Picture (cartoon, rainbow, N blue to C red):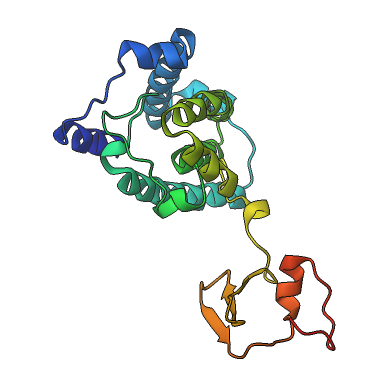
Length: 238
């Protein structure tokens, strides 16, 4: 899948391999470790497929049901990975570098998560460790998670430098590897707007529907009181 999307990026006239600035941004040591880990993963997958006699010494006694959970996690992670790549399009790069006319992607999985591609990688790496029940894959999964955790701050710094306040606002409403539940408004939240004419509008946060309360004088609704901080008094008029 990575080769397919790399080919699509190249056909779009964009760079896939890192330039000197991208390597310096990530750090030469981290870049070398990342390449080494990728090669080790491919080599160990080949060894696991051959299954030499000594491979049994590295097995982990995972129960069968847990390995099936890993299999389901792997399928879900691959689907999520593909969705993320499609959403990124030509903006995707395996390196810490931006396109010449880079656009901030906030659609698809990026509407709620800043790094969904890394979420998919973590899920897929974990699934490999569970399905294979092999200590080497467990260690590789931990190494991948640690490497991504170290890479993300550098990537976010690069994005803030490029997009400024737009990216800072995006960070406030999204989570790093999963949805930011704390940034989502609760079910009681609503936005109440009083117009000069006295009309009141309530915009429901979940469906973005507007309901107009006609008339010049209305009682403040309970859900609006939760937003404005005012106490609801049936005798009071808004």
